[in-house]
Length: 201
Image (cartoon, rainbow, N blue to C red):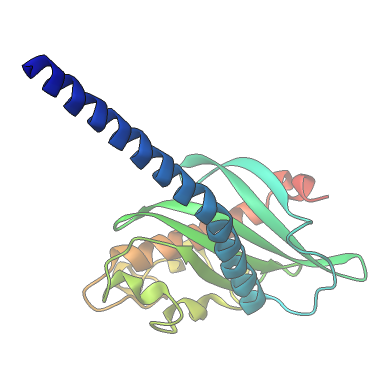
């Protein structure tokens, strides 16, 4: 009798587990496309904040480039902005791994004149109320990069003011601003290499 009860309980548990796995898989499959769509819409929004006036399909023209950047191997997504088939800017999606709470996914826009169009955060896990001030909806801090270039500054200036540089930090949070400043400088360095030029031609 006990064996029958144990067998019945085990069978019901197995059925319950299979049904649960089925519904979890169903939910994941049904939301996967929505998540992908939402991420694409956020990217389009960030692209639009940094560059206007292009007439190409900037997402379709994406270039993938494997590089060593920010101390890690990663694949960059490079979006060329074109007008009349002439590229006048590049928007580079990259990951900086040394934020206060881990990876910070960034979009950095650079014009053909090698000046920054700006920097925007795509995703991050920085501390709410402190590090999340890198988001434009929380503060204008990240907008200070627009118009800067390597030719108009030296490497020592690419630090927060606390470290002797020209960039403001947040009260109570220095690691996150340092991360964005470092990431931006390193992308500008990469942009000025022959390797980047060859990848985008």
